[in-house]
Length: 190
Image (cartoon, rainbow, N blue to C red; front, side, top):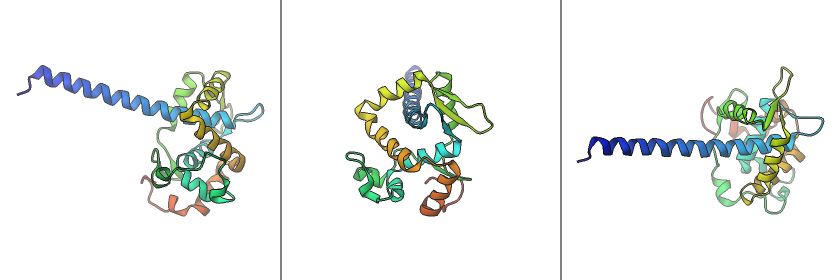
């Protein structure tokens, strides 16, 4: 029979493990979004709009869907960036179907965390614009140089080459060419 203190200790340990797992997952999403914003920030422009961010992130997280939109399909992937067989069958982190297509509720907390740490800034206009800071650019460069993030960085370069469009244009492209991603009730997983 388990004593009360043993139970309390075990419950506290489980809570700690859950918090640590949630924190690792949050850091993972923050790193991916930082890389996206960094690659789309130039001296004269920033990543404009939550819709654009969400659609680019969708294509990054669902490489099999991205492949369907690439001009030459599977042949469009630069060496070493094509999705693996497990990536074609699964997705690293599910998104939800919302008003304008794929969405992740975590965007607000991810962006807030990145801004609070001085890695990105928000634009001054009424439209959400995200720009990497010098500190964020250095962090993104260091991330992209690691084996774990190099393929993601290469895929983001591919996104920028072929899909550096407005959020509305990306939304329309996804609706027109990937109906299976959006032909589902709101708030259901894709």
